[in-house]
Image (tube, rainbow, N blue to C red):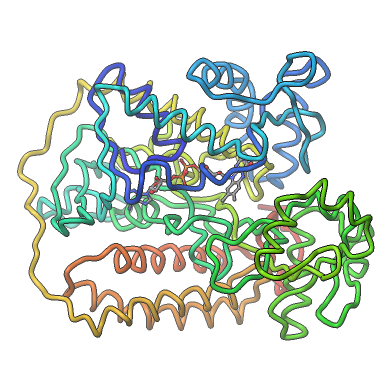
Length: 516
Ligand SMILES: Cc1cc2nc3c(=O)[nH]c(=O)nc-3n(C[C@H](O)[C@H](O)[C@H](O)COP(=O)(O)OP(=O)(O)OC[C@H]3O[C@@H](n4cnc5c(N)ncnc54)[C@H](O)[C@@H]3O)c2cc1C
């Protein structure tokens, strides 16, 4: 099991009923996007709501690319999964009547979001991590970095992407303390390594979100899809150097804050009649466009005209965060910038989270299940992680006995040395990659920008592969290599989509192609 976010922990807990599970995770057990999820998790739990409404909301958001069967499956299973989480000890807020308090978010036609204050993800992550620690069938290796998946390639066979018999036998795992690489054999391997936010200069994702699982599966010749659909949150605090970026909730705009360019002019009316309250992707695109036209690094969110007392009462976290960097939102405008937030695509999987490679499952944000299509409905991603982790565990349990250990995999070849002066190049290339992706493959794309990105990425790719071959491995180098792989996939899939749909917008193909 690679990864210890909601998807990984949930799988481990379920699969441990039948077999032994080893979780390898590259930072501490609780570090991942799950811990940062604020809003909540969606499920139909009120009498006014219905499965049909949640299904329709998800399909509308997905803009024609959802798999309807998958959407129905996830929505219908959601209430049971919530009950199971509660049984495990996860706490969701209740109202004054003692019933679960359901909130509503953009794109949802009913109140159906369960939350724990504004730290829902943290409560889920900590609770499940505790259950995992108590479980004797689960072993956890922290600061252990999965480098590559083991397949027939490691037995000397030339493996091609179109081969239908590729199988996974485990992974090479780098111990980040000893710098030794272990050959870890597994009857079943699962990747749950989260998203790719660090492809971009500004992201709400933690540092661990570097697309490792997707890159590993791609290198192992598995099928990856829908990588062009990267969701950007329109307003994160502009504070260069801070990662992850601090989210400025949409509720502030709902309360009356307005977006302005650096010279103080309102602009949202030019893009949508709903102005600052237009849907997330439209606001993100408008901000991006204004920044590009004007050459600015940010726009402002102006709350200075609002009732100061009420503002601080309603948004104490934002107020405190802004104050900590010298911005008093009662008097100063807040500099904001869109931030990479969520990846809809990833490793293509079926309803049991099986990838195109035998004995290999992908779950959580790393996977592309068909639930989100071209745009994710808010709070559906934690739900997807739980539902698919359960399906994967059941399927894995049902098939475990069919597999044996693949013994003759060679140990890691340590040949090569690292030169400290070259390691600074890794940092430079990492920054360069983020700049390329942000400037040319961000919210608004064009054929020219995508081609520029590809040309520039190829240079970093060649340099990094050369460095990788002659270096003692480090986390940073492996992450850079993975990000280059996933960056390539985002660019290639964006180039292949000759239309604008959902989160993908290309000015050379501004319309949706209804024939697709
Ligand atoms: C700020 C923020 C707010 C959000 N709010 C919500 C919300 O309200 N509702 C919602 O539904 N979704 C929300 N999301 C999205 C949601 O949190 C994620 O999609 C979800 O938590 C992903 O879970 P995961 O288990 O797939 O990955 P993660 O929780 O990201 O876990 C990935 C794990 O993989 C490990 N890992 C990665 N690479 C390697 C490697 N090479 N070797 C070993 N380990 C590795 C990481 O260390 C980590 O443990 C939010 C995301 C962010 C960033």
